[in-house]
Image (cartoon, rainbow, N blue to C red; front, side):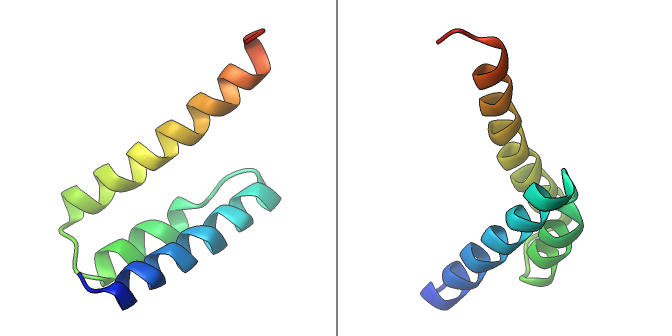
Length: 68
């Protein structure tokens, strides 16, 4: 991947997560098809999306339920 593809993925991730923040979910409806369209195999695109979602959800849970 070259720098333009990295920049495009960054912009799409920001937009998808912005919509997710407004709607309370659904970033996968934008991110996953774009990752596949950019040439990633389905399994890698799905794993990438799930890993980013897992990190985001983990941070939200820690901030709500943990005193730390």
